[in-house]
Structures are given as structure tokens and as C-alpha cells.
Length: 236
Image (tube, rainbow, N blue to C red):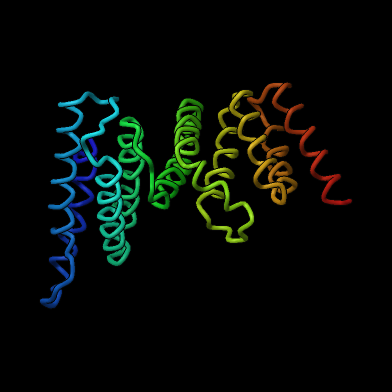
């Protein structure tokens, strides 16, 4: 599945590289990256066949395979960016989420979270209906649970692009769009615990969003109460 989704984008990137008449050298070419990804994807498929798609696999380096794939996808996306192939770049980045889900299914740990954060953000931008938002909210929850022990200690950082902040903020945004009260409550509690300085601005935007059509009275009450709470704190 991962290999099939990558195929068309990879062809476009390789063709653009070949047309660019690159000088001979020791650089890692798109074709080399695609070949390496094929090998890693074969490993993924073999592990699924031999152990089952959801088994913990102690005899295989699940984390290492995922790391290698993430690195290759990152470099391939870099080539797409260089050739201004936006759709191909988005497609390459998007595969990172499937790799993460494969890793987590086998009880692996996500050690390179940047590509996964980018893939989730792309999915959020493309989620055009309620079912997609609900599924995406679940994907955020799985990733956050996997990386929380390692990343949540970075709450003192001021870098707005740090993965933990992006995960929590985007998860809260998607939970609101899902209109699921349980998902919203869980995501909002994390925001309050880990990103209190951003709550006033976030709940102001959320209050505008839930005022629209499709949101229940309970959702409006939940968001408006938090909006009032954090607005008063920011003024204190």
C-alpha cells in the first residue's frame, strides 16, 4: 500500500531529475532513494506476512526500519521541493503517516516525529468532511500516545515549530472539527496542561468555529466556558 501510493509521485520526481541534466557526482539521486525505499517496503511487507500486521516483533528492528524510511522520504520530498513539484512533495510526505502507523501497529517507537507531524498537518488541510476529521483525530491520538513520554517534557521551549506543540495544537483543532465531545474534551485538557500560554488565542478561534452550523449546544457550551476562563486569565 505504501509503495503503491508513492509510485506516481516518485516517477514524477525521477523524471524531473533526469531532465535537469545533473552533473556527475556522489549525490544521492531520487532513483537511488526510490530503490532504497523499495527494499525497506519489502521488509515491511515481509514482517506483516511472517508475524501478522499487528504483532509485536522482537526479532526485527521496527524502529530502525521506520527511521530509514523517514530519512529516504525526507530526502525525496526535498528533491520534489527543489523541482517545485508541490503535489509530488505532498504525496511523499503523506506516506510518512502510513509508515508511522505501520511502526505503531508493531509496537514500535516513533523516533523521527517531524515527518509524521508534517503528514498529519497535510491530512488536516485536506480533510473535507466529518468522517475524515474523526479518523484524523484518532490518528493524532495514536501518535501523541506513542511519543508523549519523550516529547512532553519540551513544554518549556519557545520554538513554535517544535513537534510536541504542533501535535497538541493541531490535534485540538482537528478534534473541534470532528464535533465529537469526547475527542474535544481530551484534546482541550492536553492544551490546558501543556500549552496554557496558547489557550486564550486557541479558544477564541474555537468559539468562533463552534458558533457555526453543525455544532451541538453541548459543544458550544464546552468551548465558550473555556474561552471565558482563558480570556479572563489572560487579562489578569
